[in-house]
Image: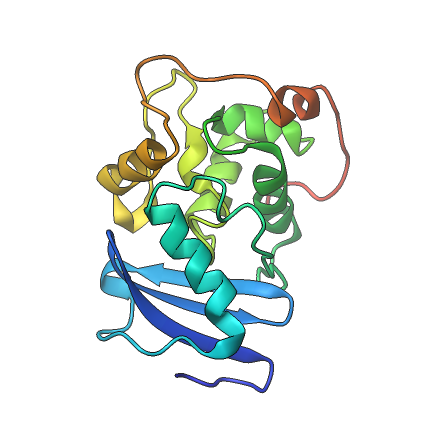
Amino acid sequence: MILATVDEYAWTQRTPLGRMTVRAGSKGVRSIAFGASAAKRSTPVPPAGRRIAQAIDRYFAGDALALERIPVDLDGVANEFHRKVLGTLRDLVGPGQTISYGELAAAVGHPGAARAVGTALARTPVPIVVPCHRVLAADGSIGGYGASGTDVKRRLLAIEGTVVGKGRRRGGRRDRALALSSTGPGPS
């Protein structure tokens, strides 16, 4: 176990994507690293992290809703616009749903800021739990997925029953929220 502060705990667990290192605290998951960014070996899950580790295991076993109830701590995201993008995405787009970068920009009150949204997603410290993989290009194509690549993005979408190229799913929380306009900090 890696102990950074009294309020922080970390572990590395195996997933179908390879090793995944998770850092969390009393407010929730603070960061997730997988692939080459993860720790080189697995470490035990501390008692405080068991619920999160079990949810990650359930997610990769096919329970697309398993991560929806896991709290996320975005306090470490320094840019207020980025926090708003990440929080809105998590609240708005559930498993089996997708949204475009432009639609997400409009949902946070900054239509036309699709590139800034892409930057916020690329810099997220909590991929998978904040579902950046659910954001597609405007034409419905896969778009990017940071250093992990589009194969990982396709695998995550497949766990949730979404096949890119067969039409994007609409409905639920996303369509209601897109009708809202908000004000606040813009892209920076």
